[in-house]
Image 1 (cartoon, helix red, strand yellow):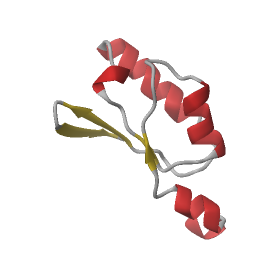
Image 2: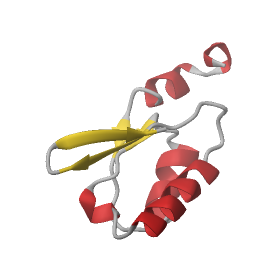
Image 3: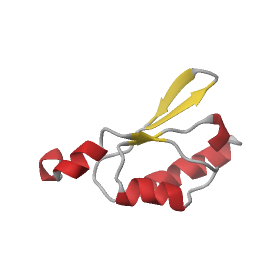
Length: 84
């Protein structure tokens, strides 16, 4: 999988990005589809309810174009939790 990536795509896999909002939006689509960042960080500002979080993470995963899975780390009051 990595062997088939361009140097730009390999570097992008090292990037971790956050976003504003609580739904999949153009900002997330840009990060995932065009920039192909390796991980999207979810902050408390991105999470309202468990059901909304489930919908959001499914939407982010559905936006992928690479075979590499995205890591979805989240933070809550300084404690990191990773959802993969």
